[in-house]
Figure 1 (cartoon, helix red, strand yellow):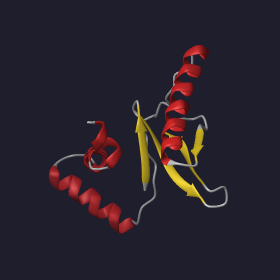
Figure 2: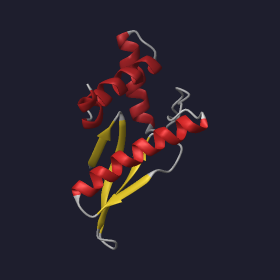
Figure 3: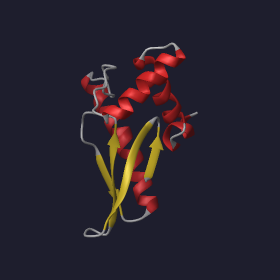
Figure 4: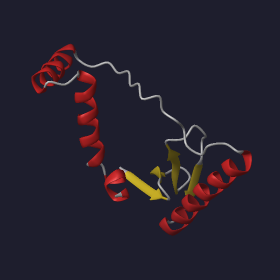
Length: 118
């Protein structure tokens, strides 16, 4: 996975063989903000420009530049995995929600994007 970061924003980057360039899109925002470049230098410049333009546009319009999350995560998992997770939480003396939050926190801290933000 190719990830770029700038001013706390992240983007996933892929190579588009048809257009023969790198393309990326900002992650974690409601708006679709894309950028591209034929070289890594052009890509880096386009990414930074996209972030700066996005933040400035939000500022001018009075809009918050980042999407807010509710804190509710709904997902479907294998019932056996669900049972194991619930048992693990119970054995630790915490709720399944608390256990999942601990697991998410650990996993997030080990990802390159958030590890590099520290």
